[in-house]
Amino acid sequence: SQWEDVQVFAPDLYAASRAGRIEAGLPLWKRLAYVAITRAEKRLFWVVRNRLARPEAPLTTADLPQPTAHLSLSATDDL
Image (cartoon, rainbow, N blue to C red; front, side):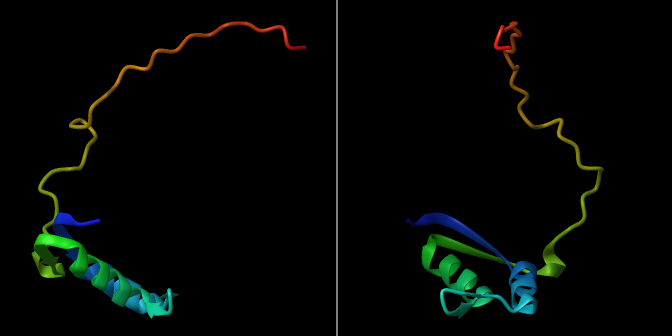
């Protein structure tokens, strides 16, 4: 499958290379980079550490949708 835009985080590739894991006969970092490069249909964003900014405010979950759960309790006589 192809994705229009793909982001590659260099710190993740660095961590994968330091871990030394092998997947499908290739170093994990190389496999992750290859998959990202070959799946990018239009744009590939290569994000390096010095371009990652710290959040300006504490992270919250206020912007996440909050679905209402429809719960009901009923007694059963399974004993």
